Length: 255
Image 1 (cartoon, rainbow, N blue to C red):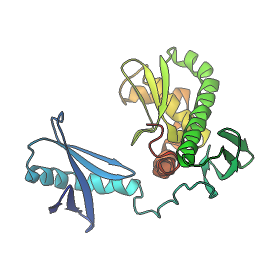
Image 2 (cartoon, one colour):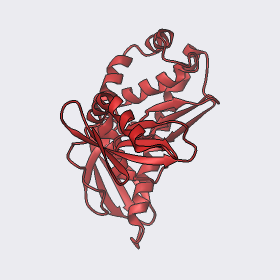
Image 3 (cartoon, rainbow, N blue to C red):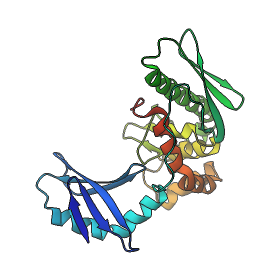
C-alpha cells in the first residue's frame, strides 16, 4: 500500500521495499504522469486529484517503478561534489580523466593527456559557477566536433538531414527529434565513449525516415550502424552514472 507524507508518497513494492515518490500538481496536467530520473521518482497530477487516485496509480505501476529505479542505481555511493581547487576524476569520452585546477588571466579549459585543466582568474568569488560553465561549454564543443565529423558520411546514407543540432542536459532521454527536424542530444554523451554518442546520433537521424520504433525503424538503424545493439546496451548499463556525473559537474548551468 502507499502512504502520504507531505509532498511525498511512500509505496510498498512487490519485493518488499519502499519507494518514495515526489508528487507535484501541474496546472496544465490532464492526467497522472510518472517519471523516473537519476534524482528519483516523480508523480505529476492535475489539480484536484484525490490522493486515493494517486496511490492506486502507483500501485498499478509498482513493478515498473521498482525496475526503473533499479536501472538508475539510486542506491549508489554519492559522488563527491565539485569543489574549486580540489582535484577529482570523471569520465570523458569513455575514459577516466583527472580534473586539475590552475590560476590564469582568463577562464579556459586545457585538454592534456589524461586530464582537463581549469584555469580560473582571481578573484575567486564566482569560481565554482565559472568552472561549471567552462565544463559545460567544453563538453558541448566536443560533441559538436564529433557530430560534424560523422554527419557527412551518414546524411547520404539516410538521404535526409536535420535542420539543427541542440545539445543540453536531458533528464532521462539521450536524444530526440522534434517536429521541426531538429536533433537534441544529451550533454552527458560527452562523457560516454564516442561509439555510444555515434549510436544516439544515428538513432535520431533514422527518425527522419521513420518517426516511431517499428521494425522498419530498427532496420534503418541496423543498416547505418550495425553495432547499435552493443552501444544501446552500454548506455542502459552505464547511462545513469554518466547523468549523475554530469549533474555534479555542471549542475543547472547548461539548462
